[in-house]
Amino acid sequence: MSKSDAIVVPARRPSLWRHADGALLNTLALGWTLSCWAGSLALLVSGPSWLRVLGTLGLAHALILSAYFLHEFAHHSIFRKPAVNRRWGEAMGWLAGSAYARFDDLRHKHMRHHVDRADVITFDVRRFLREGPAWLRRLVLACEWAHIPAVEVLMHGYVIVQPFLLDDRRDRRARVIGVLAVRLTAFALLAWASPWALLGYLVAWLLMVTALRYADAYQHTYEAFATNDLHAPMPPVADGAAPRDHAYEQHNTYSNLVSTRWPWLNLLLLNFAFHNAHHERPVEPWHRLPALHAALYPEAAGDAEGHAQTLPMARYLRSYHRHRLSRVLDDDYGAVGTGRDRADGFRGAYGVSFLTAV
Image (cartoon, rainbow, N blue to C red; front, side, top):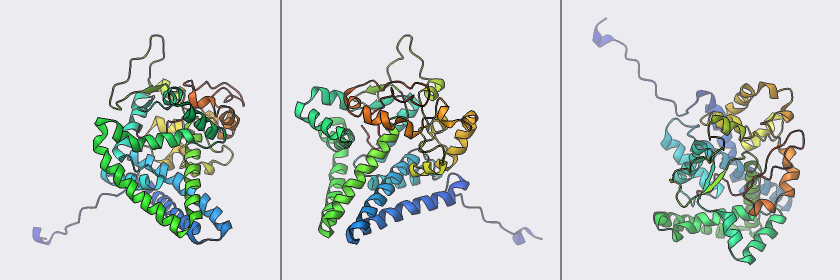
């Protein structure tokens, strides 16, 4: 056979996906998220009253998944190319209501959380409320007493006004104005189609924020640092304090599982509750986290609720309710004890959402 007769085998195209075993799972999960979002909106606009309630809950579910997919895209754990993750991350930001911030800004803040092993923020909401107008503080506390996530609403609001307050954020103004124009137009059309649909959308978004912060509040006992510059270096560790190393990270991180009896329920949060596993290997995709958790803590299989780093969500419901006001102004996250009531002294944290680039 001559060289000219040789069979040329075309080069295999690189996979779109970062992990081959995630191709089908991510296709189904992303398809479900988008379909649930569109279908729920349709129910809100044209469905009878009882179906509008279902539409509100369905929309909240879709928004929760979109937020956790944004987190996955921030870690580049879904697609092989960073640019594709960025585009999908931007899209999820539009669904989750965090598009006022650039995806790269959201990603940078979240990466600092992993690298610095701390909660780094530019808007100290507790200090703002303590030193701000008394009427605002009373309003926020009244809302939080009723479990309306006013602190998170303030954080999202600050993302919108920040470019108009800080000179080094001036380049974000056009984006904020553009996103506001699009979203206000969309909300006006939704209200025109059905005022109840707009109300349902607002309730669904608040349910999403509440679900996310119920998870976020009890995943870490990290230190919180407020700085005007998210690129500023961390202050040195205080004398006598534990170094912010891997051991510190795992000891101050908790896997707050939705359920230990029915592990599949953790899919409602895209397995984000396997948080120690996520911090052990941040690029591990959501569908591999349960297996990684089991490998990290084989001793928890027989007694998951008694394991030190496993904190089932049902165990801190009482603490979440009891400390809903002190958590607003108190910088101390509290501490985790032992036994079934070990979360009673764990106040948790507000204002640490990965959806706000502040």
